[in-house]
Length: 362
Length: 266
Image: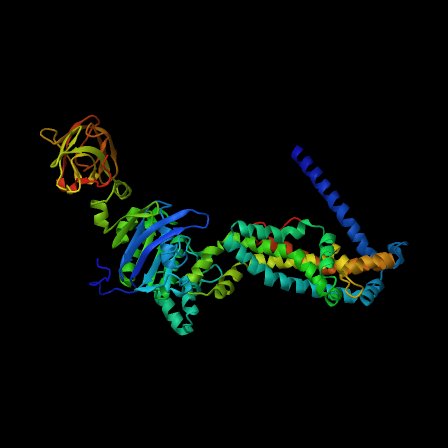
């Protein structure tokens, strides 16, 4: 996606540009390396990474809750806002704990930003009603915040954040405090809402399925640095490093010898279509997703091994095949194929699904 | 059976201890409405001593009320923003400040009063006015207000609430007014009751700081014990009780609603 976000007719908000932003905290902890990030107008970018990777710090720098170290700049539509405090950046923010005001009811919470902006009572009431309908919390307007369930609080926090028609919507792990089933449902609602609003959004999470579902692009972060930026498909199918491959989805990462056209493993040979020129022959790391491997007859198969474990996971089975690489290879097997422990099986892998990991050579 | 015996013994012990503390107070107040204490209750009951206290010492009662309310005003204006700032910073520096604010509790009231006298005794207008006592009371009660409010701030994640309000465009003052103060109300109320009660009853410091024209209720009480009939002093105690008990009860009722411990041991 181009930084201008052209082609998105429903785009609202500002383009965000983060330039050389680093953060060293008062106690000397280095929270964030110098990072660069551009978010197009109307785009949803997800910052994904394990805890302590700097994703929340980056979000807080964009929000104006943290000031980057000297040399860092934050631009909204090419205007430098680095020194502008959060209350004058016109952002909408959803906090992990929601930060709803216990002294106000639901409607007052949603309308607070409008009240600050001196929107008159009638207009405010109309806008609050609109958001209540949009987020599906009709009937709760006069409830106190502590009388709401987790999911309802989440919706109120979201409604409050978008009520002010912010330039950029910032969400800090908004679904983390909820249980798994509710999280999945709200993820769907959130996706629909973000598409409807078309507003520039930066979303922080440590949950890769959330990132995949919501992000136009995903920024994978690790130890204060950006490990990879790409669309969910790029991140999933073409991870830039072993870290990204392992963090996003299930992955087999095995050592092999690269000969130029094929990969040699203890259990046989793999054809590799994806062979970037930059990778010289020799020992390399190879990534194959479990779902891109098929179990075939061992006769004439490129890779052969035996079944070490099989676990039924509902819609399919996950088998571990030993004797092929240094560690068992995880394979997704349809339920129609019966596997027994110790069975000798062949594995077939589409060459396009074999990924050599650059920068992770032995 | 054995449990009931133990329970009965414990109850008896508790009642005895309570009686040990309550009986003298009750007797003292009873003395205040007895015609002649040495002849006992059969001499008859009267309100003449209460009337006499009112005639002699009503100015000390009003002064105590004025000082207590003024102390409350000062601790509210200084204490709430101070607690807010201390909570938002919460680093080594702010903890040091918190300790310094709490220091007057560890120092005997007499020493505190002496320090105030040494430092400000030369400003004779200030020295002679009730404002001098107010200064002492404010220093002494401030930690109770700050700690009370800090305890509530600790319980409600005020930092995130503040950031939430800021993200919606509220200036620091709007945030303080619309979000911080309303949500700290339980701590502020608890702190206020404590400050008023402590100020009304404060003696050590006040005794050192007062002049004959700036006597407070407890100082007047000491004065009446020293120079009046026992019945008058006792009637004075009665007046003091009538003033202070409702405050203490309010504090106790209120303690039930509070989140987290906010009461400092005295």
